Length: 161
Image (cartoon, rainbow, N blue to C red):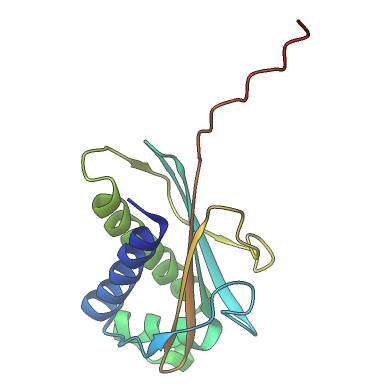
């Protein structure tokens, strides 16, 4: 699968999970990279093992995270404790990751670690080969970065003969 095709799969997974599970309508693609989610944010990372192994990092503006969590839990945004918001963000990362991996590598079994909240400074810059997709939503922005291990063949050492 090409990098473009993988990016399209990630986009579809994000859009479907947002709409079907979290009742959020994506408004369109946002600029990917460091500037995708600006200002206060909530970020979660999920490691996975399989072929390939890697990680998924989800970032949401704090306003979007609070609103989505309140809607998802059926609670008022102003009374929602930060811990509950973080739990919903971790669940969103888990669902997006599972959806993405099952579409990209459907014949592979993956082991997903428990998602955890990470400092907003972690994983800010996408490493080479990472797939990043960012979307605007009504109350902020969201970005997802999938980074997988890439196995490369070693170049043979130059012969001295």
